[in-house]
Amino acid sequence: MDPKVSFIIPALNEEKRIAILIDNINKLDKNYNYEIIVADGNSTDKTREIAEKMGAIIIRDNKDAPKTIANGRNTGASLASGEIFIFCDADTVMKDPKIFLTEVISVFKNPLIIGGAPSLSIFPNETNWKDKIFHSLFNNIVRFSFITKTPICGGQCQIVRENSFREVNGYNANIVHEEDSDFFRRLRKIGKLHFFSKLMVYESPRRYRRFGYIILFLQGVYSHVYQQIFKKNVFKEWRRIE
Image (tube, rainbow, N blue to C red; front, side, top):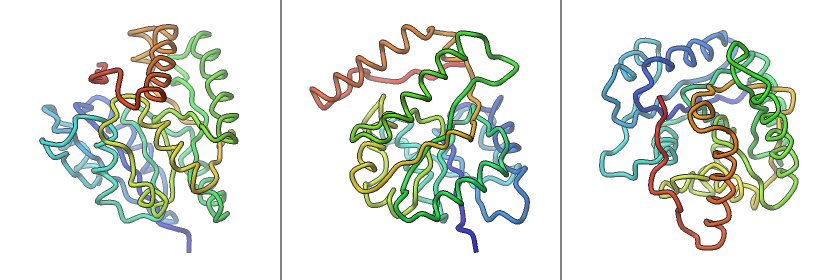
């Protein structure tokens, strides 16, 4: 029997997008054993109601916990019962859920593989030439980094074995930015990572449109170098973009 998969979605005021992702996941048929968990960061809109009506399991963040997406992912994982965790941002969708999950399960039959990530792109109806250039470069950087001791990986979609997630104590909830790469660097110490070059996850361009690729790239480099040197956050918060 194939392993059970937990889709874990951290969300905060995502009523405009959460249904699209859940509907995307629910294109999987009964041949797949999966669950959908939405870790709600105490939304003030209808995120929870929409997700629950669509069959997702809802868990709310502790109000006293760090207000980070890393904490949201950990909160969702605390309730998950799958053998494989797939963390998805609320503004993403898989190009083809059935092909996606079939490939993930196939690759994870190799016991040496403990984590991985797919290629990323912008929603086809919203993409432009800048998006294509950036994501092509980014995907190749991630692919190459996975064979090094210092992998880099965005948090839009990350895949990990449940036992490996527990072994490294999940995400560092105190990291505001670069928590995704920090998580994969710790995973890399205990096993192999796999880049799913044939699988595609589409993401919203809202952050890129707001700040631009150059600013976001420089922020990422600055944050990465600062954390490597000083072992602490350079950003006090990672702002949500509408």
